[in-house]
Image (tube, rainbow over all chains, first blue to last red; front, side, top):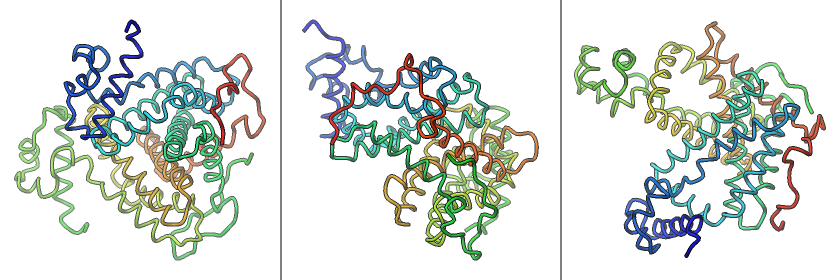
Amino acid sequence: MARWAPGTRERLRAAAMELFEERGFTATTVPDIVERAGLTKRTFFRYFSDKREVFFGDDEIPAIATRMLAEAPLDVPPLDVVLVGLRTLAQQRFEPRRSAIRAARRVIDAEPALRERDLRKQADLREAVRAGFVLRGEDPLTAVVLAGVTVELFEAALGQWLADDSDTPLAEHLDAATQRIRSVVGDGGTETGVSRPRSAWPTRRSGRRAASP
Amino acid sequence: MARWAPGTRERLRAAAMELFEERGFTATTVPDIVERAGLTKRTFFRYFSDKREVFFGDDEIPAIATRMLAEAPLDVPPLDVVLVGLRTLAQQRFEPRRSAIRAARRVIDAEPALRERDLRKQADLREAVRAGFVLRGEDPLTAVVLAGVTVELFEAALGQWLADDSDTPLAEHLDAATQRIRSVVGDGGTETGVSRPRSAWPTRRSGRRAASP
């Protein structure tokens, strides 16, 4: 019983998650949670400021991103900084907690207030990545685009990973999402010449493309 | 649908926006707004369900996206569908209202509850685009990546356009953001071999992979 630090947090989280799944988020109270966990309200509030926080214990992620961006050598290409960072996050913070994250996601998806909070978390990460790339010397547009790509890659990979019943690691879903975003933005008709939009439909004129890899 | 008295809606919106800028969002009431506009509360509630809605009158955007995705011929490459759609939205719904949108953005940025609502709007658009691409026959990962790219391109372009004091149209900012996302995702060292992360920097650690399938 001595090791109350990580164990207690996880016990509270597990009890809360069980109840959220059984009764729904709204119907579950903090007293219910501590009763199920066999702990006191005081203990609960030492770890979480309210029951929404049970889902969002990983709010350190933007701070981690800031640190990773500051520590990566300046000659590492920006997308590698992103991919190495996401892969590290995946392995250290997500991979070991897949079933807990999956349960949390079900509750979040069913509860609009939690969905908004989840979106704010994504926005906080986006902002941390943007600011980090500005500090690395990227121009404002590049920084904002990199931040957007970071969040979308991670969310896409996370969604696939949580939906996937095989044991494919999150890092592999990240690789797949990265390949997909490359082919999607490189693949406009402009690049492949598959076909041009019909003239009846408002077409996009002029084949612009960036230097290809 | 857009036939009913755009004048009244705009009058209410303009009055609200003036007050939000003068007094802040929280301190402004619906009675204040209708007084400033010289209209009645009843009229206000015919157009907006509450004062937050003043900012989010363009909630039809996800429905517009759904329609555009359904109407674009199936042989149009996905990224062209996205770019034509965003360009059309930009020209029809954003370009004519730049100063109003800029004022609204200042109020939104200062008010956390409005920022969360704005994020939810983006999420609704993302979901509409994802679902639209699934209906067009894209696989789930491609659809989600396309949806993410759509939202990030539009948000990046919008941010640049609102910050830009020249008269550069939003559509040009969209082109710039598109070029940028292409160069950013195409440029990763991993594909181009430009450079590998130094070994001193936490590279993809091999040791940690979960069992692969």
